[in-house]
Length: 299
Image (cartoon, rainbow, N blue to C red):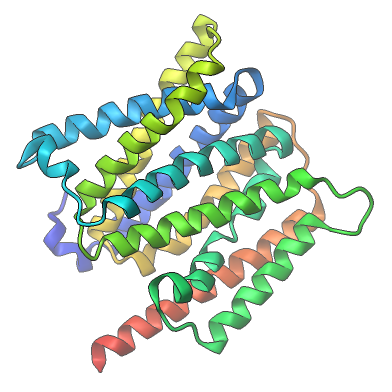
């Protein structure tokens, strides 16, 4: 692979890595839906984070400074909050997969970049212009089309992926906040360890033995979780985030395909229209962010 310092010349590689990331994430979500339908969500997330914690500790042990360096954070309370929010978000999204299915859960969750843009002001102190605010409002109109409040019987479960998207947006913004003082390896370590410690009491309380086949699926889930994070890190290492982030929306396509083919879900027309509006608004906000970053560099 081309070295990281050649990143500007590797946009095409970054795009392919991001596409691979979305495929692995979609497979991961399909496995999570299967396991979460049969076993406790707490237990599934706990085992996943046990593996994640071992993975990040192994990486930290091999890095310069070892485990001691990985634990040394300039913002330990914020790192703790990040880890707790992420593990809770994963558990909430798994509930959404089980209650709503992959298609509708992902269709609503795609609004998280809009939430990142909306919350970047109060959390990071960034300025959000009228164009991005307009895109945010248009995107949330798309979410309302997906949810269809007021039409027939509205399921409160439809709000669960919206809660998950909000939590993931806050997690992402806090990650950017701690990046001002902590390295990526420190944040990665705290994410895995805090999540494992936080979820263990709940997971053990709801422990049930899996069938041998489902232990196999659990092992595959753990491997896909590690692989997806590795691919994501590599994609951002070789290309600008603003150039490859739009391709992250492909996860909605792959996850919907798995939902249709594997789980027999249905694709409602309001979900297609609403998700299309949300994705278009999200891509516009990413484009505006790129324009602002280029203008700042020229200034």
